[in-house]
Image 1 (tube, rainbow, N blue to C red):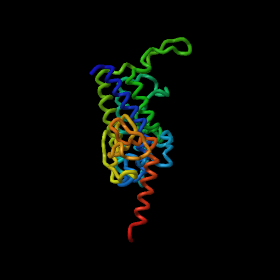
Image 2 (image 1 turned 60 degrees about the horizontal axis):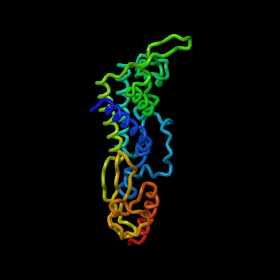
Image 3 (image 1 turned 30 degrees about the vertical axis):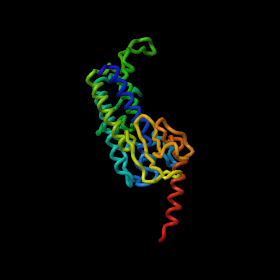
Amino acid sequence: MSYAQAVGETVRALRVVRGRWADLLLAIETPPADHWPPRQLAHTMRADDELLVEDRAPLVLREHPAPLNLGALDAGRAVERLIFDLADTLAAAVQRTDPGDPRAWLSTDPGAPDSHRAAGSRRHGLHFACVWVEGRVLDEDTAPETELDGAISAPPYEVLPLYLLHEARRTARIAEARVLRALGLDRREIPLPEPCPWCAGELTLHTSPDTPPTISCGTGPNCTAPVPLNERGLRLWAWAALPDLAAVLSENTRLAQLSTPK
């Protein structure tokens, strides 16, 4: 693998972790679903899914008195530890800037007089850690800097050694896989228990790390669902159409329950 490929894979994995972090936090507060919507979509189709992750304390620094999805919580805590520990390792090797520099990564300090200072940069959360690690992988701030008085100062960071780049790549990809697996967004094709409301065909949920989830009907062009055909000739509900499908399936389930003899 080339140097550029290692950098590219690491940055991509870190951005997937950051981009899906709000979904994972919502999943912790959402019971695992065994009906519609499937668990891959339950947290992302909530009405209150506008989550500002910057306002959430890191999972490893706060209590969780009643999490609704222990699997998502365990994955989140594991991912935070992976990224935080990676940042500690990179900082020890290449950071040369003063601890007062806002760009600096501060490791934990159990002897600090208050909890915020004891937590170091971990208190800023996973987003900050991912962005900081990405900066080290991209060799940002590794050139000498000019001070206000015109003096030239040493660079805040040294260039990341190759062995640490490979360690960052390995860690970031493990973290990415944990997040996607916890959300059910790794590459899968899962038949749904509910039939297509238009033709009673089999519905299949398609997930992938790189694209939003979709659902297809196995009947083919004869299905009359009001969605386009995909390249395989199947009716396909893209991400934007899934709430409409959810509404129809939920209503059908409600009507079936009402008609079931007590």
